[in-house]
Image (tube, rainbow, N blue to C red; front, side):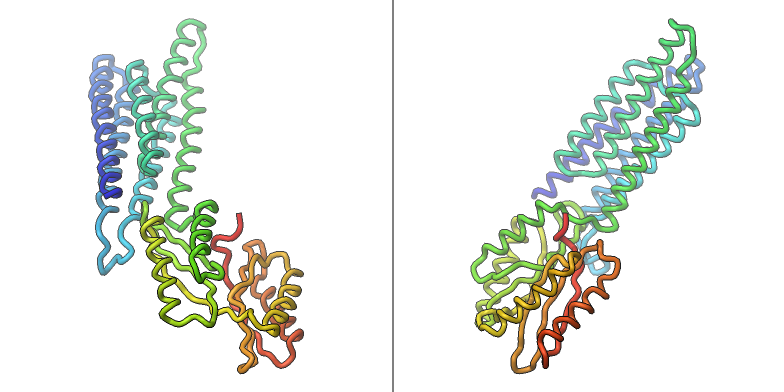
Length: 357
């Protein structure tokens, strides 16, 4: 229901943008033809691209809301990131035109309309977390800034006797290009896969750790497939004494929590922990002493000593700042084996998906 309401809000907001920009296209085209001004007619074309941005937003929103299917089992939510990328291209086009032409609209009413559209889009985009609407809002606001600067330039030329309009157009056009690149960088980063905000990750881990029977929460991985459409995995530590039935009950609680509160389909992996006996505790302590010599190691988890098989297993999370993480892990593995004669050590390398700032 929340996604349906969000889709309706985006489409409704985009229609407002289309109506406002179509009005400006007609108004500026009429004035440009009557006044014989190529610059005003060109500005009408620019407003047409703004209307096109809103149309792209509507199409992208509709497509991203499609249900998952056999070909795309994760759904179509990431189309929204592609939408904001296309709008970023339009912003770059507008900035390039501003630099090339060094002129924009000269009608005061157009400034007011574009400013209102820009603020409306940005507010709605922030409220419902729509990158496409926020990008369209930025586009409209920059049109308003350009129009204002051009009007100021004309007044300076008229009353002060020197021409600054072209220079203002170039300066602001370059600023628009910079902002357009920023929008594109953000949307492309989302398509590649951004790290989730640390506060969000910490909140999830705390809730999982508070579930009875969970001895630790590790290896949390989250992937976004659109607004409120996440798929992830996590490992939890549990006592080796628990039965399969008890472990399944814990797994179900975690899965339901993540789905209902965090809109995430979560796969839960299990680490059996046997730190109740003195041998395992001492072995873990000596291993920690080794690991503390390596500042790029952020965490150890999944520690298990198998006395019968003479094996020691654990996972290490290594910072992205470590230029040679595999080499670091190999050194730790060798030192652990030296400290535990007769045991074979197995170390799993885990990437830093969510631990660091």
